[in-house]
Length: 136
Image 1: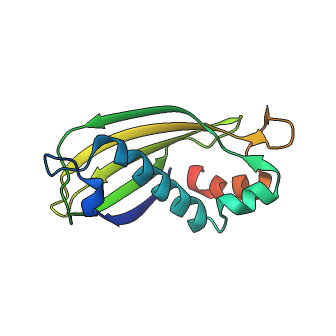
Image 2: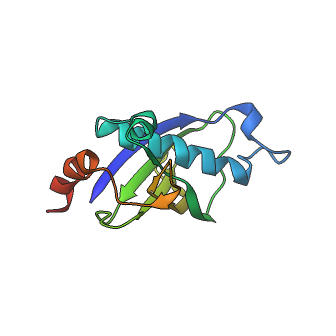
């Protein structure tokens, strides 16, 4: 299993009239955490695009347990529970507050696709090789 953590400070503009993080803002939090997880492997989305690979989101699930508020420091865990061997990759996310309370869980499914043909493909081999030790 591959797990990373990213911290995000809630900005005022991300809260709603009730003073809590607007539900739709968790999706960008998940994206930031995914990008940092890939960076921890030594790559960026830009690197994958240079390899001719894009990663569109095809499915999003979010479960809200407790609210986050303005200026909270959130920890977003990104977890790969399975090594992606086909065109699909599933990122699981957990959002915690500073008291280590679980606030939100999510799962985002993306596909690896050849950018020029818009056809599904597998994870680029260099990234797959970086991930394999976490699943042995």
